[in-house]
Image (cartoon, rainbow, N blue to C red; front, side, top):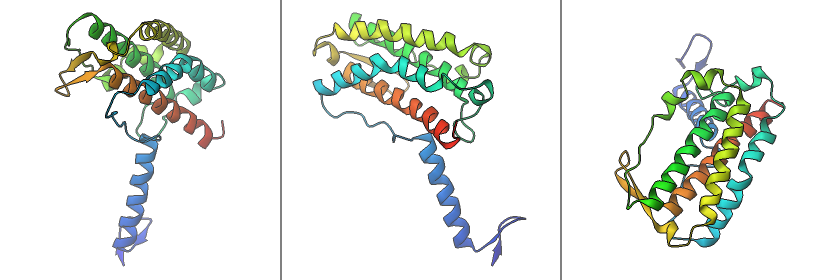
Length: 200
């Protein structure tokens, strides 16, 4: 037997097994719907489905968090993760960037977009002290404008691109839409799963 800690005496194989289970659990908490998979080819049906989901997304988020207390909003969705409140401020930050990226790509030839350090944004004072309803209303406003842009786009428009300097690659607007469709579901699952786990 090999002593691993003061309160547990495990064989090395048991320790590795338990550590792997914990790592799998953390990975599941991080990516409850899986990691983003970029689409391989244009799919008009997937675009329609993504737009329909994102059109209703602000209300879905509002309905999900409407009964949460201040203490619950201050709870991280996973160990070492953002609080629910930080998530609710991050989502409109991210989707506002998406909206601007779409408009840039539609009005310029493969513009270079500006990445941002989302983890540092989440630590700024506005993410700590702003009432969540301000960000929920911002999310609603951004989505109304963004959806109106997309509903006026042709299939060819979805083939327009921007250049992501951090990733050093071009991204089409239909693949960007797929990314933000995933992003919305990803963070909603973080919150909804936390609520379910804690029986809130």
